[in-house]
Image: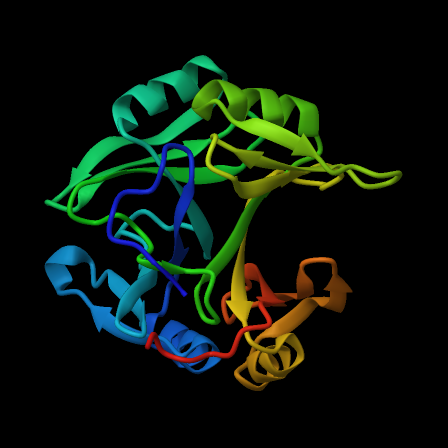
Length: 257
């Protein structure tokens, strides 16, 4: 189990947040699937809901703001020490700032960006809230990756934004690289996708059992389970059509000792 209480390094995927039109339905699906419990905020916080795993912050649900409909989907947050400077750097490199940096009470500063290829992500500058407190554990965020039709150009953009270093893993018919900021790999970037998007993968103890549970709860499978060198992976569409992935970790789903 990886539990953290300090801000994540610059450029690290640090959180996953689901935009959802129905909090009750989201809790009914993701609670049994990942073992999450929920802390729903008051109306003045738009009922922003934190998902907890073993008492640690694992993810969140965010209803669309009134009068501002947003499509349901998982939003990857990238950590930054200065959201204003990072947003300006992104805009200079061709991105669109969908939500200018804004303070979120005492928790931190948030900006939402569409990169030059259309993939949407958030910038998160931590104060009292670092993002995910638990990762790499069944029921927690495990891997984040950017998929695009334009891998080389996407790599250039994120290199400009965060100074990413890339380790190419490509093979015939397969374009992929991991990225890091000098502290070991923190995510991946792939080519060959029809659209650009950030994708979140959650760890599970048993991929096939979790796929069956997701289907029982009303989800659908968009990527059948298959083995990879890193674990058994499958793609799920949740109750609102939002897509995410599951990957087995080979570790049991047990609380921290």
